[in-house]
Length: 189
Image (cartoon, rainbow, N blue to C red):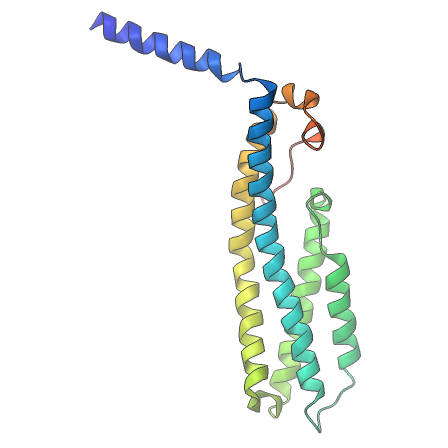
């Protein structure tokens, strides 16, 4: 029994000591893998958001083609869509949570206004393409939370890695040598 306990202690000690003895090359390989996962999660999230914006733009164009509809709101919708395209946060700018809040508020306001416009014009709801676009926009908007959660999970890996290797990453090549902990989408962390 003593020998089993001693063996377990010895293996645990070796593993703990070995955890900090990774070469710079090994740490760089790990960083590269984490960067790839982070980029993939970000790309999936922004691609979904891009599709939502493109569908929103297409929806406004489709509405403009329906005769007899008051077109005075189209300019503000198009301006709002352009604003979304140019004001979305980046991985770097989300260090300020107000950037995310501002973008989310602008998105929610625009979506609510466009949906209300379509709802106030029953003629528009007769067109299948308009209904299909509204549905796809809603699905993309709903999936945003799932994509943000996926990004945050990957960010857990990134931030843990940065904390664990904070001294070692300073000697790695760019971009790893400038890595610092990043902010999450989730409200409290």
